[in-house]
Amino acid sequence: MDSPAVPVPLDSNEQPILEHLLHTRDALILLKQDKSTYIKSRDVIPLYEDVIVQVETLNAVRRNDDRRLVHNRLDYVLDDCFQLISLLFLTVGRNNEAPATYSLATTVQRLLDHLEETGFYSAKDLESITKTIENMRQTLGRGTENYSPQLLTLLESRLEQCQISLFRLQMGLEPLSPDLVPLHETLISILRSTSAANTRSKFSSSEVRELQERLKEVESHLQDDNFVSQDGPVLEGQEVVKGLLDRCWKWSELVLERKGKIEERFKEPYDSLLDIRNQLERLSMTQAWSLRETDLFQYQRKLDRIDEARVNGNFIGGDGQPAEIHAQRTLLYLIRRSYAYIYALLIASEPVSEALLPIYNQLQTLRRCLIEVKESGGISNARELYPYSMKVSENLESRKKLLRFTDDSTDNGQLNSIDNMRINGKFYVGNDLPEGQASVNTLLAECYDFAYELRAAVDEDQDGENDE
Image (cartoon, rainbow, N blue to C red; front, side, top):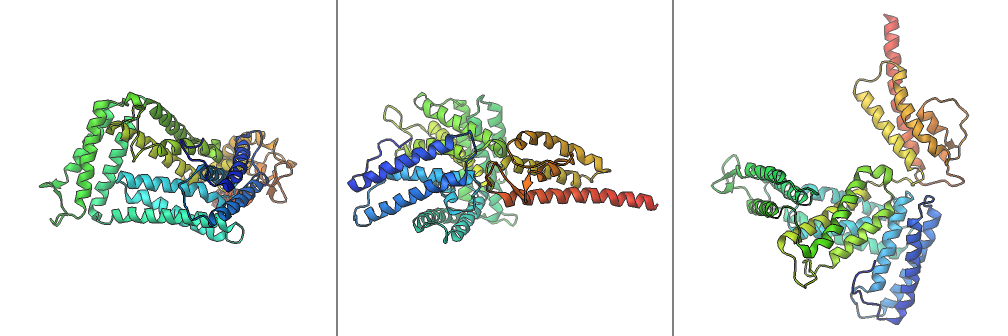
């Protein structure tokens, strides 16, 4: 789990802190691995408080030390603890509290560092990150009364680093003329699609050649080797676009030449990264039903260690020689794509405890169905609502055994089934009151509203027919 060749703490006063944090990290890992029951806030908070005590002790030890050494093993273990706590907060549904932002902040920084390293990205890449950073700032602002100043200072520093990196990237797009933005975004899409084709289980030359045809379409906009506006002047920032166009051509030709074959020296990290990317891709498609946020920790750590093993940005083989350009770009693409999946999964996390997620997800499904019915013209009679109710009601039976409720009614449809699970307006699991009550109740109310609107529309139509 630890990075290779990470130095141990030199200060003897740090050793007890390290040993304590190692025990805490073990407890956090055991908690995340226990799938026999859902994780509760009361399981997480004492471990969080324990880590904060160690941070305060560490700060006191280092306050009088003029040396600022590179990260040692203690720093890496502390980072593991904060990552796990952050993911555990997401798992219990406390997404809008300060500790939950730690994992997202570190993932955002990884993404920004890689975008800066590649030198090609679009404004669309930065829009989501800009919004995410702002949301995290608001979360920290709400946490000033409830969380340790040490934690808030650490998180604010992380966000400040992210903001600086984001600003540099935004400035990098400033020279680009608005007329060139669509072509620039097209080329970035082609370059990434070429990299994706390069990592397919079955390489397709025709797929890459189709992408080359799109490159020819971009080239068709050139006049006398320049991109010009409709009025005739040469557009600003075209050197960026022309450089990207040239890179796309060279990369596609190299990919066609290699046909998805990686250097044998780098087959092991390639297979590992490919497996990570594929697993994260599958998770992204089934996220609402299968993801426990703490599962992301193992992927984060594997990616971090492979990424950090680079020397001056290069992957080094067992012979001590750097990777050639094809292997280098292929491995970096897989790392970056995997971080992007983790980022997407983190921001998609709902502020609902995993104990309530099955009900929450079923309500979301029902809500989407009701919206689609409404947008497609509504229903002709109330019976048409029954299939939507019955479909998910069957899925609820397994959850009813776990949830404490009294079902003293006949089957009035799925909404009533879920409503009957509540006790005094709240969903209990045993004697526990899981996080996310407001989110589930709000969604339930929305579903009731949609169902009422559909039934009301039928009643109005029938009244109209009777009047006639």
